[in-house]
Image 1 (cartoon, one colour):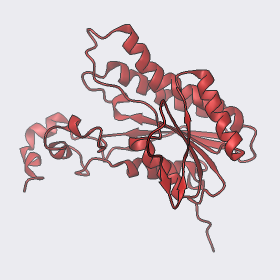
Image 2 (image 1 turned 180 degrees about the vertical axis):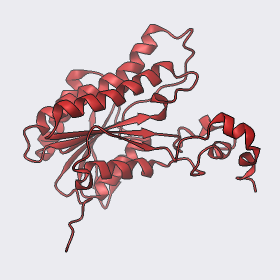
Image 3 (image 1 turned 120 degrees about the vertical axis):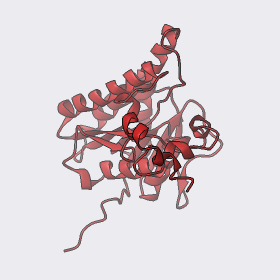
Length: 265
């Protein structure tokens, strides 16, 4: 028996929101390496776009919080590539903020970026995918904050929790043509996030993760590749936790101090 290559995306079209930097940049590179045509978006075009094997992602300036901009992004992919097979809703994020004093405007902007924007782009993508013989796949990039919030992340955590439930709801409504899944990301090592993890670059943080390391962007990209491929053709409305096993509970760490010395031994 000969099996086809499930991660051959030649001739297929992919949108990666927030694909100009960080995790999204690597996701875009990964799909390019798999043969896909890739369109990335952001507020401003970067000096360098994702590329792989001599091929470079296309770019469209987009504010995904604006429904009209989101629809135009999807139409641009169809105009360029003739179809849309995969949408990766990766754009998101938030600085920490004190919930007791944060402004209503701040909360609105964080919810708009992390919850409303993914819906905007997904709605436009679904309208195209439903007309295609092979349908399509939508992948929402969430966060462990949506299920295990930390201080300073009230608006962000609430929005990410909503994104997880939105994924499940849309999967019910848009099946069988369109599959929609969610990735819960844990701590991820990127240049932008390095200072967040302390002066040691995150060495201490890794001690509370069962896999003994933070994720790297390729861990998320490879999971996207799986969820977009034929390997997951019967997978929809689900959540894949890519967080290295999560974090050891505080009560366990309090009674097992040796965990804090394993990285220095």
